[in-house]
Length: 506
Image (cartoon, rainbow, N blue to C red; front, side, top):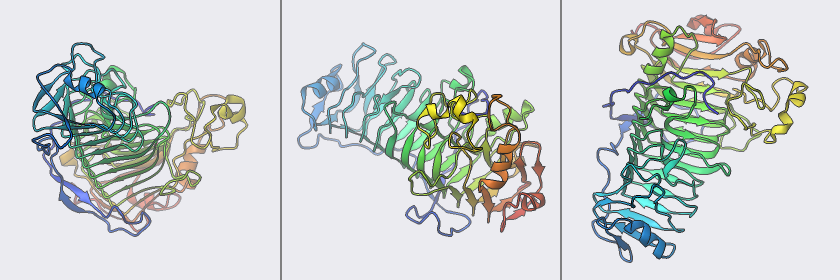
């Protein structure tokens, strides 16, 4: 699993001070003709100003004492499902055992009073675990737990139907939060966690109906895992794996060490809208080996400066972009609210490059080059159907590939001022490309076949966009760097109806 390009070591980015994100009508049809640029609206600083919880215990609630070690876990165990617990102000602890944790029962509700903190003391691994459904956590700070790599602190076992609202999950190792089906994460602060703010992964099957709304997701991957395990693809403000149906809207995703939002491996039916994504060391958004998404009405700025600059300094000519679509595309045969990837009505300002559509010719189910180890495509869930003898006889671009296809990029505004980004080259790219297929020797995708397909026949299209600044364009392979006239002309014929002002961006 993970990014098909190599990763660089991340350096910490300064905290962003911007307060604006975009707004658009989230109920409008994805196919409707949008205006070229979204409006602006204020974004709440959730981490700096969290909403306070109830100052007294609600009727029928069980009060939990901060001064009694393990009181929360003990009262959870001794009360029936559906109980409401009110955590008094102060620091609540679980006891010295590293596996000490709260194991909710179905329908339990946990409400924090102002100043209520559940503290792992850098010794407990998990805060809330177990398989109970429909658990609610509100107005509670969860901090200083030490979950292992790829594991999480809150909802450790990815139970279904949890609601996390007005919570602060900070300064933990691993992921602050895991996810299950129908989980809702709203108006919460996911800050300074060692690996992820949230890891939306469930080993027993896909996650459906995930909502992530109005959160601040900042400063995650403090343990710098991409440096410690180069190319692991195991970091991000949020990472999504095999999520079928997600609404990610109205969030402030900023200053994460690495990627802001990363959907990796057999995700489908995403709406990523009205977010402010800024100041992340890596890409604002990666959509990888996945299907069918609407990405609209977002403001995306000052992302990818650390990774993009590091790769350019190494002499790598690959167009590392702030929105990176890798082996992902629209697929009408997979049920979703759209049958393509539509990227529209976004503003991208002073990022390291723009949007790259990429397809690795050597990456397909059962290929040794496939980093999604053990996973096949959603069209061919039986991995044995893509075994070497079968795929060697398969028609070109068979369903054993994740294909970058049916991507529609329109009515966006792309602004670049190189003086702001502090770059002279390679930060100005918009790209659609693939590599020359070489591996393995039995692959039916060797040569320029994938490069030709992604560029000319897989219905990837830019149109009706506005460019401000000295943009360049890459098509087919990294060696084909084009000006705007050649990008619009034969044979590429991109960006019909678009305009470019090369001067205004510096």
